[in-house]
Amino acid sequence: MKIKTTDFPIKGDSRGSLIAIESNKDIPFDIKRIYYIFDTKPGVVRGHHAHKTLEQMLICVSGSCTIVLDDGENRNEVVLSDPSSGLYVGPNIWHEMKDFSEGAVLLVLASDFYNENDYIRNYDEFMNYIRAIHREG
Image (cartoon, rainbow, N blue to C red):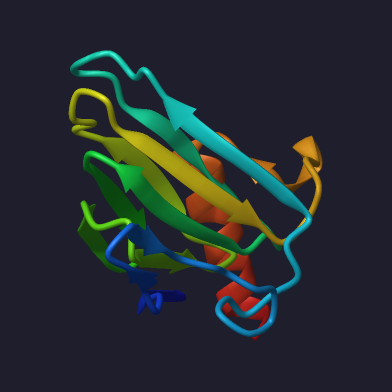
């Protein structure tokens, strides 16, 4: 599965902490898009999609949430609750975000601009896409 947790170096002093993230240094791609999810209501599950080529780094900068990851063969859950830790999600990974704590903010750094054609929004279509990739490769 094309996922990996990453710990970012914390810099700071008695005034507080700071984390700086640089493209192709702290994350394995150029950052072309940044967005964040916040004010998610209890019980809401977000995501429900995969990307064909997009790479992402997910960081819960406040609170916590659970990321469900599925590569068509394995399904894992990762809890993000530390702003100094990120979760790399590569292409062809179905993902869902759930269990947002009150005040949670999930920051997403993405390798490309928004492109609806890169999304697979139906799980059955995702599984067909994954099977086709395995047949070709």
